[in-house]
Amino acid sequence: MKKAILIIIIIGMFSWALYDFVFSSNKTAQEADAPPAGNQITSQENQTSEVEKTGDSSEVGLEVGNLAPDFKLPTLDGELIQLSELRGKRVMVNFWATWCPPCRAEMPDMQKFHENKDINILAVNLTETEGDLMNIQNFVSEYELTFPILKDENTEVANRYQIQPIPSTFMIDSNGIIQYKAFGAMNYDLMVQEFEKME
Image (cartoon, rainbow, N blue to C red):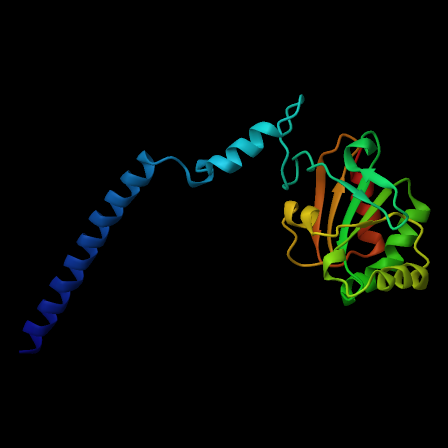
């Protein structure tokens, strides 16, 4: 009786292995015929990438090696700053808010970085999430920040950059190409390290 049960178990396992092998082979063949998942772009994304293609070989996007999406935002003083107008200079774009503890932690390092290196810092405040504009003014005074604070009042730019955690930072070289992305606070040494890798 035990031998019969053992034989049934062995036959069952062999049958399952054979079925699994055949099924996997068919699935692999179907996947080989299908276009790669990375190439399945929705028509809207396709149109956006076509519209945003530039004269050089870089495509606008959010990955390292992509041309950083352009934007224009007002500073706290009302001056309009456009990212593309800083072409030829190295830029750090940082998304932050006054209520965010890691943002508070990295601000002194960002100020030191701004003072010690030839970098353009654009600190994009998620203004829609702030309770009051005075919170931003008080924050700037408290931390003695001298780089531009941009107001993203409708989080339009944050949405375009698909910002989830804050702070989020993009290090952009003088050609407008994203060279580094950080999700979370950066310290001074890391800022300098990534800055020195850029043109």
